[in-house]
Every structure is written in structure tokens, then in C-alpha cells.
Length: 180
Image (cartoon, rainbow, N blue to C red; front, side, top):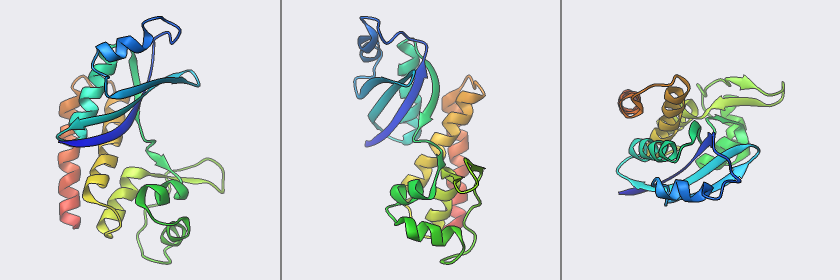
């Protein structure tokens, strides 16, 4: 068993209710810290499981069992170069050089721009590229893909999160193995 750290952002419960935190504990979130920030319920997990997908699926079920609506799983899938540096253990300067093609070719293109000077990248795509260039572990790349797949399933209101996540990760792991 491994420990996985992630957060679930949820809504739909009154944080002022007397039983607010107890509901989560009783529903199986005894390995999480519960907070209410900027109008959202934040459930920060450190969950033991066989895999990241099992950890996410069981956590989502537990949050739903508490009566909350799951909005998304974090860490945020959109990342800046500073975020990429922090998650990969590399420097911001190194990430800038990779993004400009000065250290290696083929760094993924940004997927969004907050402003013209602040591009954002898809973390799962960057994690795959970093893994392919021996800059990130396979487990970290898989975790990035798991969060992205879980969020896609949550957005599309997939009824079978476990199967959806398993299928996405199986395909992603095959891509990683081919690239290695």
C-alpha cells in the first residue's frame, strides 16, 4: 500500500451545520482534513491504497456519501512553469529553457493563457514529456493522468468512475511504456 496526497473540491453542504465535519468522518474521510475556502469544501486526503486510481475513486465515493457534490480533484491540472518546476523538483529557469526548446525539443505547448505573459500547461501532458526525458518518475506521471481522467469523468458525469479511470490509466500507462 502507498500513500497518495490529493484534494477533492466539493459543494452542496452547509459548513455552518453542527455535523459538517462529522459527516465526512462518518462517511470514511477519516484520513482527510476538511476545510471551507472561498465558497468550496476542500477535503485534503492522505489516503493509503494500492494505486492512485483506487485512492481517488474511494475518496470520491466517501465525499459523496457525506452528502457533498464532488466538483473536481486537485492538484490543479493546469500549471505554470513555476508549478511545473515545483512538482518536478527542477528550477524555474530550467523549465523556461525546456519550454523554449533550449534544453530539449518537443516540450508540450501551453493549453491556455491567463494573460499574454502567463501561459498554462496541461500537467498530465507535461508529466508524460518529463517522464520520457527521465525528469519525472513513472508514478508521478501516472498520478497526473489519474487526476486529469478523474476530472474528465466528473465533468462528464460518468456513472462508473472506477471503470472510466481504469480505462484511461491503462491506455496512458501503455503510452508511457512505449515512450520509455
